[in-house]
Length: 508
Image (cartoon, rainbow, N blue to C red; front, side, top):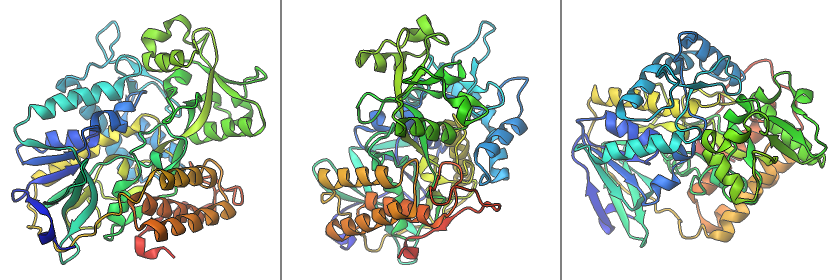
């Protein structure tokens, strides 16, 4: 369909189109002042942003005992061989300043009796460095502040009630904005010289997730079909302790509970983590997730026991978890919390440099939909919010310091949005969880790829199907177990760690 066949909006020369209103998108929009910014978001964005659901907090070297070197070392160790050391050091060295910036913007971080930031210990960190907000509400409180700041900023305009579904390109392959659809189905072509993808992750592609169901890898699908390069798509992090009460999405029992001393026990009343890993409950997330999954497969229901570690302080220290439990008839002060692994974070995404630039002219990617190399095969706890502000700030600085060519869209691809009905979506989600979950093998992955190809033939190249196809293909190609990617048929880790890169035209 030519652009002339639908309504178009041309942004001013040099203006930035930000797709997504989570922390990465909003923080970058703020930092782009005085350049004009247009934030494309649905009306549900505040509730549907994964940033707002983050419980643990934001990690950074903030204490006198800590250092960027230590934080970078922990980040590299958690990433199981695939973290880019230079990128990890950028995250760690610039992190404290970004947290202090959030503090100055009005984020009400928890403080100790001396007025210093209160820092929690989380899994695979060598010492406490996670800044929290009102116990377990860091994400929600940070997003609330960002939304208020953006609303007061003269340089930011909200394009509210629109959801991006494909990217516009010019005749040279550069990205020239996006095609968006509103709730009534009206299409709008938005031409922009600079486009930033900040759309979040892929949890909604799986049947059991702690993410918003709308997190379906849209950025990956949109960018893949116009030639964007993807990195480490196979690495999906399963949070070990989703609260298993039959809800979709599953509520989260934050990592900080185990940092406070909560233990994992099975239905026999036995603490089982020491049997699986020397670090016990504070082992890297992928190890804890596989241990919990093994207990489930063995018929021993896993529980999180917070009675001694948190006890009567639960309502004020972890109000979000407490409310989720109580709503299901579980009082975590005196009872056990049933838990199960759930898709929580995608380490892979659009391959970018340290300023968020992709391989396509005019296209940047930030936050969970990007892959800078900072997370490797397994994200370190509470590095995600930090990644959003560190690399969002770097992208803003880069854009402000450079000029960009004018982009004029050529033709567009209309997304088969409406054909991705509830039946197709649920079929995909069930298949992804069954065949590309905590434990994978070639038989399962080939079965999944055949199903996805059949769904694409049936409904067209819908973004969730393209994103799922690339995750499954990357998982099949990586014949080893590393970080969040575990293969039953290749349980060992190869001596050489190599990141995977994939483009849509490489698929069979």
